[in-house]
Image 1 (cartoon, rainbow over the protein chains, first blue to last red):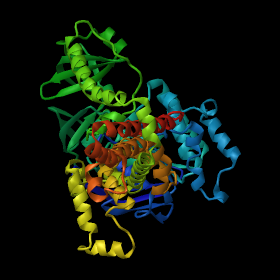
Image 2: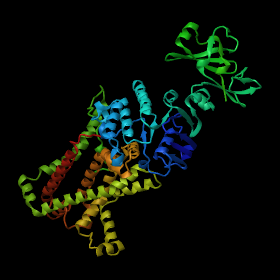
Image 3: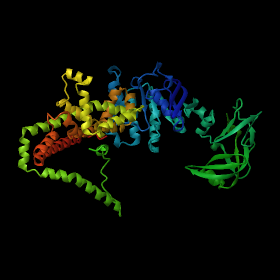
Length: 345
Length: 280
């Protein structure tokens, strides 16, 4: 549905380099990356709101690289909703209808269905100024969908919302994707959001596409240290393979199953690390000895930084595990993990 | 009219009112200076408005020469404001939306009419429109004269009023996020459609404000007009003539009527702008 080939956007202060991306019809694709990675530039290039320096963009089999945005039939929803403040919600939703040829215009009943689905019935005649974030985002979605775009682009659709509206809109997005025959491309910096909503994920860093793949694969087998860090593998060490063992951070452990070739990085999720006061780990577990440097409570979890001889590990413990283990900063502890939890790349 | 007119037109975010913290001597100092400056503006005007007797005023307004000059002043200023709106809006929009080499230069050129001495404006326009310049010859062959004509007055007024309209309109366009236009484009609106359906409704207060400022500047122009067109006489020129020929007493009533007419018009424009329910 969307085929981006070697897309480059070069600005004095920013570069997007040779992005290639293929998104299937009906897919929900998430483009993931930190702020400033160029995610929005990719979206706006596809929508025609930014002029690419080189490369081509095809949408629904049609080369749109040099086509004006209004001729592309691509909807875009921004994180700040960008509802027209001088128009009511209904007028916002109907804004684009006059540009649709009369024969293609959606039936009034279809539009009512959309309004019902997005639960906008009660606020149709209100101005955006007085709406909550969730209402604004739903109105903005309705406005984009009303003209029945072939592709809908979502620019951080949940980022500006309060947590309670975030769940609501997240659910709405999932629902929209299931009920409408539409291809969705979402940009976000939140991995959990992407994993929940999207089938496939692309990770963008400094204007370069680092990895593209199914959400689960990106989560389990990140391809670069950057992606590993981004999907929550906080422990990333330089490492190497010595025959059938993996050496990193002063440790030597058996190879996890999937290693191919010669990796130079080893990553480990903080939640896969177990802390104990005694070295009572069973056989396959890899163990090392260290000191708890810092404990930071984070919601239901505690993040512990453990200093071993050659490296610092970050571990996440549930509150219960913290209390039962009685860990304190400065404690000498044993740290253990399954070799299978390691990811080498 | 000062070049820092943008502040006079800001849409207030809401009536916060003056709330004083205790011990704010600085506030009273500010207040003291403000009162002085307000008196400086108001006293001469009040004095002038109250000096002529009612009979003088009534006699003046029945004078056909005065009426003609007032009417000429108002409609030439209106025409100048309209021309500024027509030709200034595209430039203001370009400046608000695009970065290009020499933009600062263009912006300075727009501000030029504010700073050059007014007679210079008149002389410059005349020299271009005179018989010695090809443009003047072309215009003469088309029957357009600048010297001593209404066309000339409007040309001069547009020249001096344009910066006020363009700067105000530019500020208004800059206040409309580009994102709104982008969304409009993605919904199928062409650039012009996005401009008229989104940008203009969100910046019309600034545009109107610019028109008022431009008209106000035009109506107050004397130095340039007097060089280009002593006749037909606009109100300021008539005042000047009566002042030099008969003295202060005879020029004052004309001034009072001009002030009243302008005040009434500008108030009317602001009132027209008011009842719109959609405040951007």
